[in-house]
Length: 219
Image (tube, rainbow, N blue to C red; front, side, top):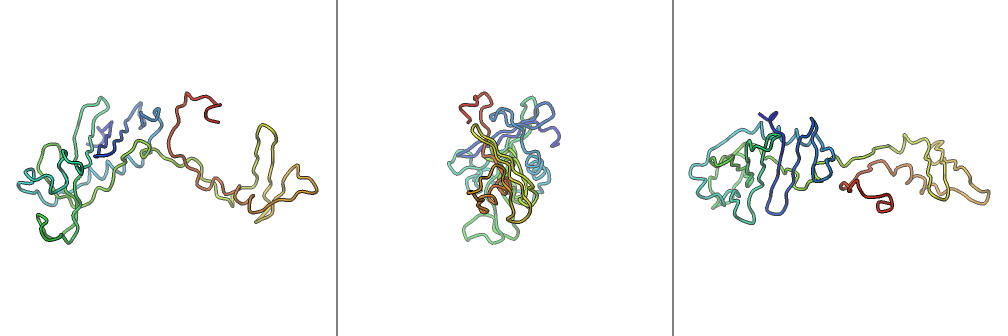
């Protein structure tokens, strides 16, 4: 039952990430409990819940490396550990190689169909009917990086203030701008103003800074 899941931990040979539920919201604890992107979590949990086994590979546990499921190798599987809110493990899903419709000669278990080899806990190797895709491998990949989305056409005015001066740009139409405090011998550069009005069209962050940092450090 995916509703019991309170923590999702992803481990690969080169990376790891973790997201957990605290006080009825999903957060990334390593990023100072910054809210996680709930849509990403539900998307991946739903993908796990809706997996359908297409074939159980007899003897597959004896040749895990052939399916990309040997956790002791450098090219091992992605391991998805699902736990409840108390940290009690509910299931460990290992995601191995994908299988295309056409398998090269020499690969085991040739046949029709696509899918991916997985192993749940210490169970058998199973070929599921759909690829699970890539789970977030870094903590920052769990957050919603979109901060602001303002279309340039929706901007009617831009107000800018710093330690020395302030500006107020009024948008009167396409390439039609009025700037306050403009001297007679000065003129506006429309390309620069256009860049300004579209600056927040897709404004995103890359990660989360320590909230204890002072203003001088963060600028």
